[in-house]
Length: 400
Image 1 (cartoon, rainbow, N blue to C red):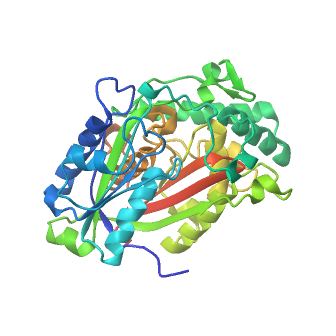
Image 2 (cartoon, one colour):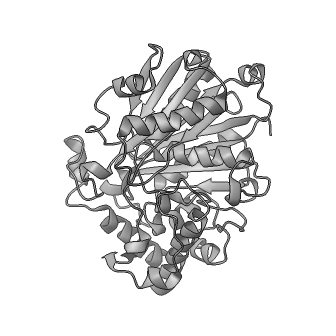
């Protein structure tokens, strides 16, 4: 592996809009809401930003093509802005562009912004026309709940876990995220639920019920990054460094051949292994303080715990029920409420997750603050179990 990104770049500031049904504003308003907080936190003027990356997933209606919407909304000083789209990893992809630009020396200070406004375009996460002619060979008549439901049945079959036990563990995932979100004023849904409510909810795609699904939402989040030296020259003392940024993309092997059993997501495993190597992490279960992972459905979060090598193979359901990933557990997951309670404005989610890691590391997470976190992991998954893009970002105290 190349020398990597570890501690070459730090986060100078971060911001996040309130997520939810934001009928009161447009996409530009959401960008401004997040950016104003970020710029104030960074303690710089916008003219000091050299370049920007904007992540947007599917919101061509509200944001449009290209990068003009960001430049116009934020009144940026005629700088280069690159719009990126990489499914649900779009915001982390924007962050990757900004971080790599600073690390390379191409610019001193860069902005990464993610935005998506979905509630007023009718998007419900249901089947849609796919992208690219070749891609259609792998995408016949699909729905997200249907395919992730098959992830649950395959996981149950491969590991010999009774579906009733797996459903209880899936329910615990959702109950845990709702409990965490009651402490987060920026979450879309801030209401606790019970295991009984989850288990008795209407079925969406067996075994996934209503409360096993995340929702559709509007939101924006952003981060300003720079070098450690510049951050210190600006008076920053408690620095949050970028430890690793890795991305893995399916090549058709899972869908087109018979060597994948459907019980795990290969790109996540590849990205995680590379990220741990880049960050110098040997034992993630004992070194990571917290995670924010892609929980489009409760089973996704559960399986991801194994794909990130935090739970042993076949043991994630037991770990979930034992509280390993609860707010008081060994490795809290979705301490901000996750996609389950923030909803999933696709282009904004990755930076929203990094925002929570940043707050936690600086001790600024309020009622949900964890005790002395040192390393946080953000995982994004775009696509479906048989074909997807996975990103893993790790941030932590600079120099640790």
